[in-house]
Length: 93
Image (cartoon, rainbow, N blue to C red):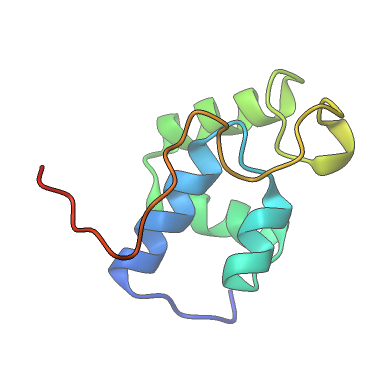
């Protein structure tokens, strides 16, 4: 992998890769890394059994990790149930 990421960036890439609804294109857009680089990062950072489980899920057809395979009704990278964040308010939680 050409790009080095800090802990927070690696954590976010792994989190996005685990999410079925987040396509590889979204990861590439945000972090400028290809699908093969995401796979390389996952292989390096996950336990072997976790990596195999993730690869099996991504390749099974259940995952919608590729925009071309997605349901055409899904148009956004974020979940429709996700709250919009107001930049003027701080969460009290």
